[in-house]
Image (cartoon, rainbow, N blue to C red; front, side):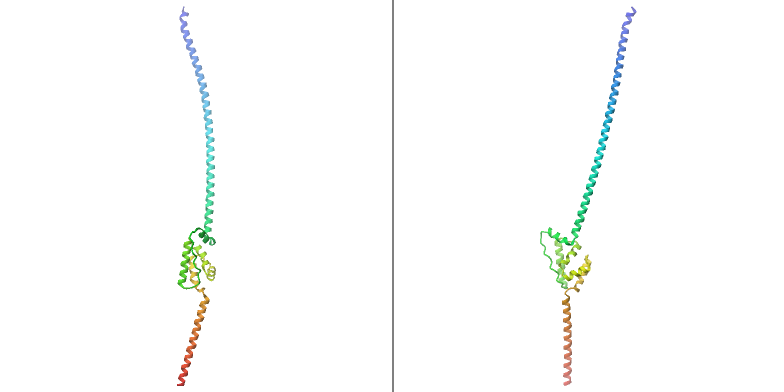
Length: 222
């Protein structure tokens, strides 16, 4: 009778124990699943970090390569610009090409100044220098060295030789040489003038002597 009364309680305890065992098994399963999920998550994170690191290294190397390429291109461009600048400066300062280069770019035909005749009069010199200045201005030649290098084209041979002998390279030397060119212009004409003046002086002296002799003869007759 007592066994029959205790049966429901035992049965209840058995059910509770079974439920506890089932709960423990489920907890063990959840722990196992959690461990597997944790391991999988860690592996995924490691793979992601490895991929990010590789991508970062690749991008860094690409940026370095791009920087090197840009620096090389800029260096090449700078060298090319310097070379072009040097060639242009040499071409601009070259006496043989300065006038030809300006002539090809001008659409207006500029008449050349007349060749200096060698006349030492101030007016003739001023007219020649003014015409030469206007010619160079119209051609766009403003560099003094280029002007001096091309000015002898419009001079007589004697004046050109004198400028080459003095090695004229700047404006001051050119002015000093131009002022002294009067000593070399038309020497034959000056010599002829001097000889003519000497002849006139001699004729005058002879006439004066003749007059003095005639006067003395008249006085003696008286």
